[in-house]
Amino acid sequence: MDEQKKQFDFGENWDEFSRKALNPERVRQARDDFSKLLEGTELQGRSFVDIGFGQGLSLLAATASGAFTVGCDINPKCKEVLDANRRCFPEAEAACIPVITGSILDDAVLNNIRATVPGGQFDIVHSWGVLHHTGNMKKAIVNAASLVKPGGRFVLAIYNRHWTSPVWFIIKWFYNMMPKFVRKIMILIFYPVIWLAKYAVTKDDPKKQARGMDFYYNVIDWVGGYPYEYASLDKIEKMLAGLGFAPVKKIPAQVPTGCNEFVFEKL
Ligand SMILES: C[S@@+](CC[C@H](N)C(=O)[O-])C[C@H]1O[C@@H](n2cnc3c(N)ncnc32)[C@H](O)[C@@H]1O
Image (cartoon, rainbow, N blue to C red; front, top):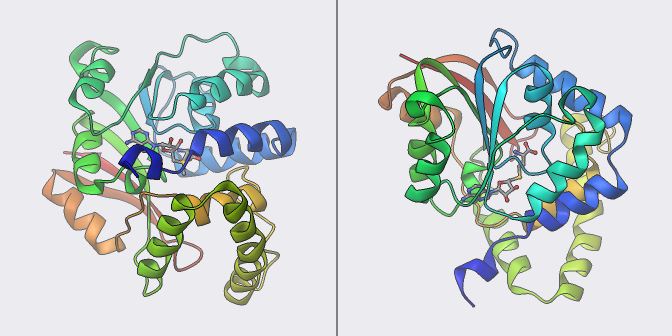
C-alpha cells in the first residue's frame, strides 16, 4: 500500500462534520476559542496563513476579524468544505481567500504560499493539529516557521507525548490499512472506550468539546488521524527556540494525549 493511501482522509471527515454536526452554537464556540488563543495577537489588517485549515473554522474566524488570509491544506476536499462553511461567517462570506492545495512539506507549495504576500512572509502563521500529521513533523515545523515575519507570531498545536502515544500510533496505522467496514467497527469500539477514558481524566461530560468540535467526529479523527507524531511541551519549546522564536503563550493539553497549544514570536 503506498503512502498516499495510508494517509487518513481528513477531508471526508470534515465534510461530514460540517454537513451533519456544525451548527450556530458550535460556530460561536469556535470563534470564541480562536479569539482566546489569539488574545494579544492583532489580526485586523494583518497577513495570516492557516496551514492545514481542515473545515476552515479558524481560517474564516481570522478573515472575519479583518485579517488578509491564505489557506493551505493537502486534502482537496477541504477547499470545498471551506467554501460551504463560509455561510456560517457572514463577514467572511464574500472575502477573497487564496487557497493552496498541497503539502507544507513540498517546496513548490511553500513558494506558492510565499507568493501570496509581499515579502513572502506572514504576520501570523497558524497551524492547529496539523504538523504532526504530515509524515515529517520536524520538517513541517521548520517550513511553517520559515513563513513567519520577524516580529510575527507562530500559533500551533501539537499532540503531546505520553506513554500511550506509541499505542495510538499503531491504532491509527492499523485503522488506515483496514477496509471501510472494519474502520466502522473500530469507531464503534473506540467511542465508548474514549468516552470512559476522558471521563476518568476530566470528570466532565466527554461529549463537551472545545473549538466547535463534535465528540463523534473527533473520535474518528483521533482513531484515524495518520500519519501521527507527538512531542512534549519542552521539546517543541526547545525546537522553536533553536529556530529563533520566543514563547508568548502555552496551554497544556486537557488530556494526556491531547494537543498542547503554543504561541511563539519570531525574534
Ligand atoms: C486534524 S486536522 C486540523 C484541522 C484544523 N487545523 C483544525 O484546527 O481543526 C489536520 C488537517 O491537516 C491537513 N494536513 C495533513 N497533512 C498536511 C500537509 N502535509 N500539508 C498541509 N495540510 C496537511 C489535513 O488534510 C487536515 O485538514
